[in-house]
Length: 391
Image 1 (cartoon, rainbow, N blue to C red):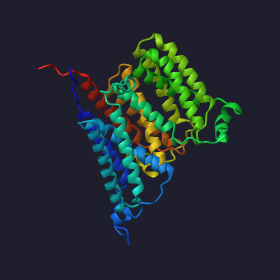
Image 2: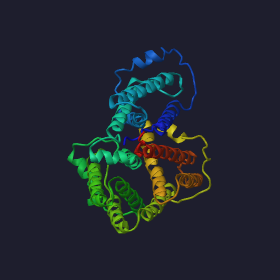
Image 3: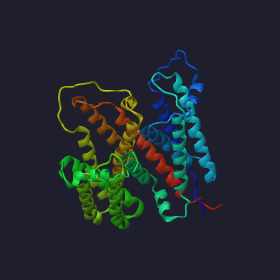
Image 4: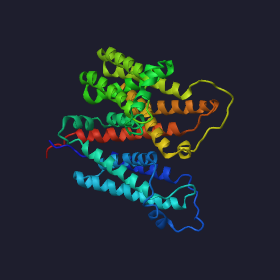
């Protein structure tokens, strides 16, 4: 029997992505008409040949990639219609933001940003089309059937492998290996952090491909990531990362005899402990050095776009994976969202006693937003898998 095509959840997620883009593009919403300005359109067109920095260009692509990805699942029609719609949507949204930024204090109006944003929407749309549930290729069909796990792995790769540029330099390869070969050292906290990340990655791979195949796919995944880090500019290997992967694999195999829920429960405890330990390290608490920020995403607005986008993907992976593991352990998504949001809010409040930290409500709000996104995606995925009763 044919399957239903529910797109309501993906429509809502696409709208959420648009709201996030508008908020991030126009904050702090301080408007002013530039003195001796030539107008937004002429300023925009006048930058057509400006060469952007690599980091900003890649970050602008990644900023609009989720919009294209979710938008392609929200639009009905064949693959060309879906891809065309999300590309036009991304381009129109980007151009409108660039023109509006002409009047936004502290913002720049540049054509290169629109180029990158439109490319990001198109790339996300292409990924969404390729991973559509009706694909015949088994590998892609399995990824599409488990969109949450696939999306979390994608977020992990997006922040871990940045800036995605391989170096053709033997000295760089040697420099990447030096911390392992010449200066091997182990930091218990960093080792635990990497163990938790690799263990969660193993369970995500298992959720997509099954336990048996995950037992040999996970080592290939680890090897591919570590090899990529040797090649990628500015990436270095560490003993903590390699040892963490080995420990995670041993634990993953040791837990294979238990049910899915107990294994997810163990992984969720380990992962949550690693995330909160990382947030509060080095545990050198002093008298309150700054206040608590109540403006959502305030710290994101103060940094460069490449750092902000990478931070967003990193947090999306951490908080999304915590939610996913808790639901796999048997806790409902609503309660999981409450637990994660409360934990993040409490740890953020404690950060006022840690020098150099940004204590604000952003992480708790992000957890609630991610929970909503995961819930909407799961709802539509389940609806798509239900057959339509014959008339």
